[in-house]
Image (spheres, rainbow, N blue to C red):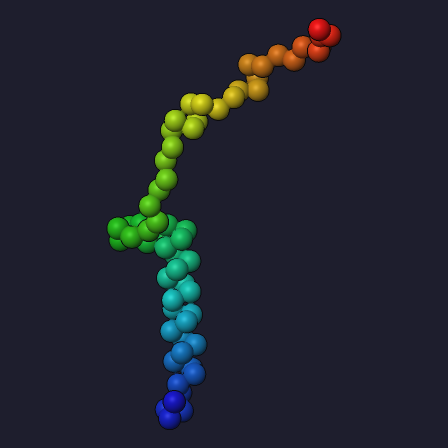
Length: 62
């Protein structure tokens, strides 16, 4: 910490890390082959209830 510009370099390093993390998270680095892995669960989409296919009926007393 004897260097007079130490905190300036630390601030720039943190800024660069923050920008790189934001780009990685928003898939901006996908062109370089980097980025988060995509989670795909097609079986969950197939198992969803479709409200347009449901019909509501009045409750009946036993």
